[in-house]
Length: 190
Image 1 (cartoon, rainbow, N blue to C red):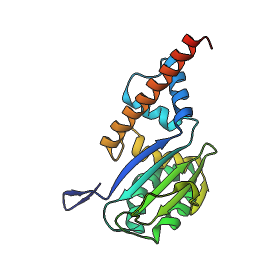
Image 2 (cartoon, rainbow, N blue to C red):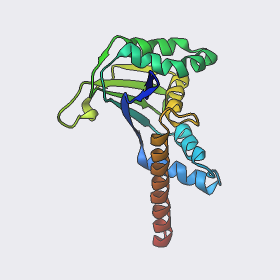
Image 3 (cartoon, rainbow, N blue to C red):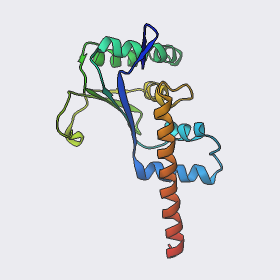
Image 4 (spheres, rainbow, N blue to C red):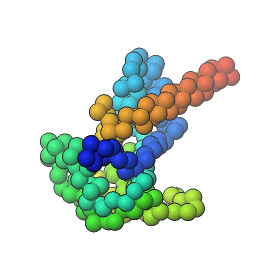
C-alpha cells in the first residue's frame, strides 16, 4: 500500500510460498519444543526456517521500478547499512529500478536455503505461468538482503498485516498436516 494525499492506494497483491514438507517438519519440531505462543512465533518460524521460501508480488497498477524500489528502500536501506551490505541492495535496486512495471507484472523473490535471493520479473500473463522453466534475472548472495526483504512482509511491523495473518493460518495448517502424519506413523508402527 502507498499513501497518496492521505488516500491509501493498492499497488500490489502478495502471496508467500514455502517448501511445504520441510516447513511442516520444522514447524512440528518447534511446536514440540514449546516455541509457539503467538502469531509472531509462527512468522518467526517462517522467517528462520531452513527451507526455500518465496514472495510473489503481482502489481495491480503501473509503477516505475524506481517507485517500487524507493518504497522498499525506506524500510530496507537502514537495515542493509547496519549489516554493512549496501552493495547487495544496490544490485537489487539496479535489477528492478530501471524497469517499467505495468499492471499484472509479477515480481518473485525466492530466498533459497543457501542464503541467495533470486529475483524473477514476469510480464503480465493471460495464461498460467510456467515457473519451473523460468530463469531468474539476478541472483544475489546475501542473507541480510533475503531476511530484510522477507521481514518487510512477515516481520512484526509487516507492511501488509492482512497477508501476514493469512500466512500464520497457512503455517498452522502445515503444522496440523505434520501432526496428522506423525500420528499416522505412530499408529502404523513406524
